[in-house]
Amino acid sequence: MELRHLRYFVAVAEELSFRRAAHRLHVSHPALSQQIHDLENELALKLFERNSRGVELTEAGRAFLLGGRRVLAAAQQAIAQAQEAAKGERGRLVIGSIGFLTSSFLPIALGRFREQRPLVEATALHMSNRAQVEAVLNGSIMLGIGFYGYVLEEDEQDQVSTRLLLRSPVGIGCSKHRRLPKRAVPKLTDFRYDKFISFDPEYGSTYEQWIRGLCRRFGRFEPEFEAIADSLESLVSMIAAGRGVFAGPEIAIRGRTAAIDFYLLTEFESEFELFAIWKKQSQIDPTISKFIEVLQEAIKPAEVAGKSGS
Image (cartoon, rainbow, N blue to C red):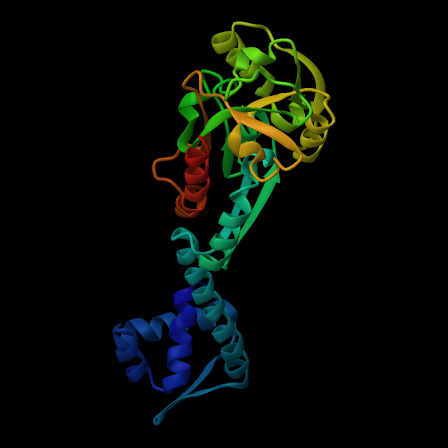
């Protein structure tokens, strides 16, 4: 039995006339009669009583009509939902992100996206850069937000698509009790003998590698790491307590500088780049495309704040 059999049956049952039902369905009278005959044979049930005045439903036909209408309504609903999903208006969106880098804009983007796409279930998970790449490729997340310069293997680069989300100026955070040179703006080399605070690899993989490259390239020294933070709160607490200094993007600790000092490093041109990543496909999923659009709108104030701060 196919859906067309149900449509034909319901039309005849509602019209109580093969002629009117055939006209409504835009099929020939003989073709419609044959389809109903085939349906009755398949069910081994007599659904209609035929007489000179037309047709009437049997008791079995009346019972079948109730179920047939429900099935057709469910099919129509399924089609509508599939069409909504194809347009990015329904479904799910699982996002992996590095929390300390996205806390200033991701919650805003999720709220706006919920307003615009209430039928899309969006979920954000904390994941390191490497974990995001693996999850994107195996399909457990649909979108990642992080920095991927050190984690994408050569064979993976052709399997993913990326989009630059923002560039953030780089700075250094230290305790308010840390004595600094009297010049107006500290330099990276002023911290060559300080202990640096890193992140737990499970929280921010490749971060330490990024800092080492920064210090070698622009400060010409090898940083020494003293403590490991597993959250933004623990990072700020360690800096405030004088456990070490933190070098990284300004966006990472925006709004958390009341307890510490943070200085933008202006002696060199270096910006931290944050990307969106998703599995490459012939056409970007409309849900992903729409969320990136909302995300970029939420990021704009963050970029303006960063530029004004620099």
